[in-house]
Length: 102
Image (tube, rainbow, N blue to C red; front, side, top):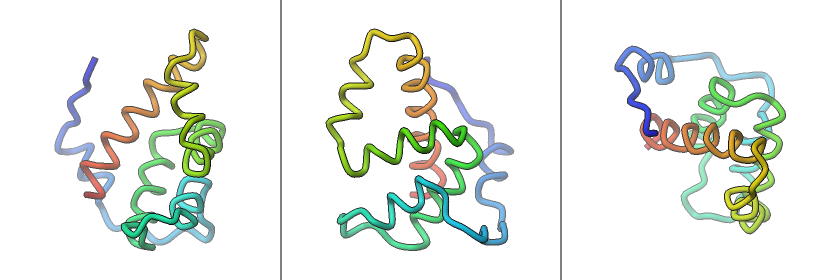
């Protein structure tokens, strides 16, 4: 089921926030990514969305997808209920990050 984000929720993500003292797992994985599109501002934005939407454990699991995209496919196709719930959270995070961070 696709969730619709309210304008207030999106505003909370894009509100100016002081830069964290450290980069989380998603932000570090993004910065280490070989993609041309990776930039400090983009990775910081994605990391901030991850901090709002994913637990620390979810972030560590998702960060592994940057190095091993096949592992994402394995989780997506898994029959384990825990993987299904994680994947739902991960898809919501990805949609929000795309909307907020461009």
